[in-house]
Image 1: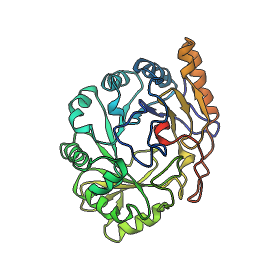
Image 2 (image 1 turned 135 degrees about the horizontal axis):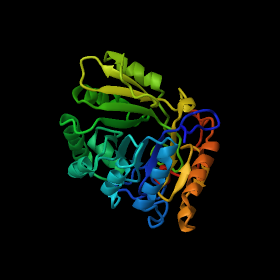
Image 3 (image 1 turned 90 degrees about the vertical axis):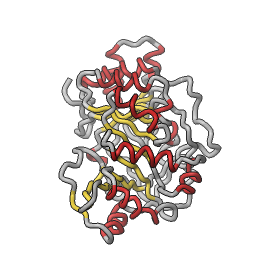
Length: 329
């Protein structure tokens, strides 16, 4: 097949796959109001089903797979899944987003499986704040993993920071200092409205331009010469520093016109936009013993309904009903 395009001419070559709805944390911005799991965890795709889908989508142009959750390192069989995905012709990169709690002890197995990159979600560098967010004392564990991966150059590391006024806006320069000291890329992300968001209720997003101004008052930046093509972040090197910083601005600088991704939920729903409840159900295809072409047709269906943009603003309410724990980000 040729490179797949949606009805607006955007090429799609990237899929985010949620491999589990389980998590070892109970972060306030991700879990439902009562902190419970959104759905039981016995209705998720098997490792072989995920592999089959990606093997079908690769000839249609999918080149990059990111494994998410929940916490993907809780998924039984995650290392064999990475190996299987890496063996699929056409798949150039298999990456993972993790909370970092289980990362350090699993580094050898992830290396052996062939993981290419790692993203770590971390919204504070302060131990007490992390405990308040997650319900667990994780600061030392996560920071030790970040330092080891970065200092030993095991993988390229991105640290995702959702910037929230009145919560962690006083840590922006601390995160930049981390990127100055270590070869990591810290990405500041404008807070987006999500369903059942307990932590962010009543707080406001910080625009990327404001964050950039704060950083430039202290540090000298220059555009990164090899920023990944097609990514949503505007990336800069820190002059005299080891790492980089980036700004992801889904609200103030809509980048939907270049969106190149789909999302596959743990139970097998193919989503063409994070902020739309429109889904194409692939799970029933496995229940009905569907042939390969059926799944390929559903892939095309998801492309056909991909919206032009999310239409969000800083004042928007949550545009979809599912919380992040049910989507996979």
